[in-house]
Structure formats: structure tokens, C-alpha cells
Length: 103
Image 1 (tube, rainbow, N blue to C red):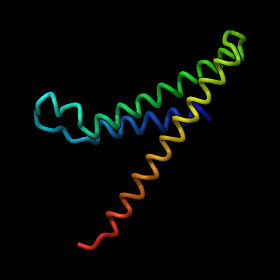
Image 2: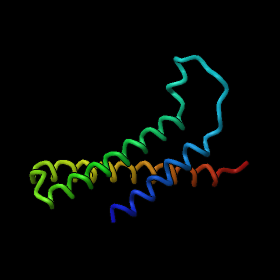
Image 3: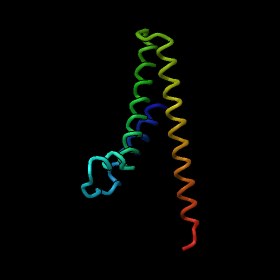
Image 4: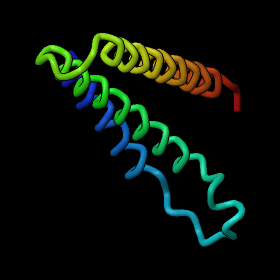
């Protein structure tokens, strides 16, 4: 199941980074506020959290990680996944609301 999530998350990160139009050069104060870059970084961080949880879970099965470490990382991955799904749901709802507006 986790490898399937990795492929979905990787695809989402690539889609966000490739689909984002290249903005003209702006000052360094506003460069960090670019929404697509922030979204891509958040997706990358989520992917890193999921991979870390999988690695720790594998180490736990092999006896190389404690139960507490495995539990902490798996719970962190679960929170990350729930947050990601909530953001996706809000984005879909916003898109649907905009698409229903009259011109």
C-alpha cells in the first residue's frame, strides 16, 4: 500500500512542479511566497515523511528499530496523509465552486 502512495505522491509532486508556469523574476522577498513552490515543497515533505515511516517500519520488522520509533513514524505518516487528503479535498471543493460560478 505504501509503494502505491509513493507513486501517487511522486506523480503529484512532478505534476505540480511541471505544471507551474515560470513566473518572471521577482524580488527575493516575494520569491518565497510562490504558491506552486510552496505546494511542491509541502508535497515533497509529505513524501519524505511517508518514506521515513516505511523505512522505520521495515527496520522494526528486522529488529533494528524500537516499537516506539516505529509507532512515532507511522503515526506521523498517518497525520501527513490525513493533512494531504484534507488539502486535496479543499482544493477540489474550491475548484468545483469556481467552475459553478456564472460568467
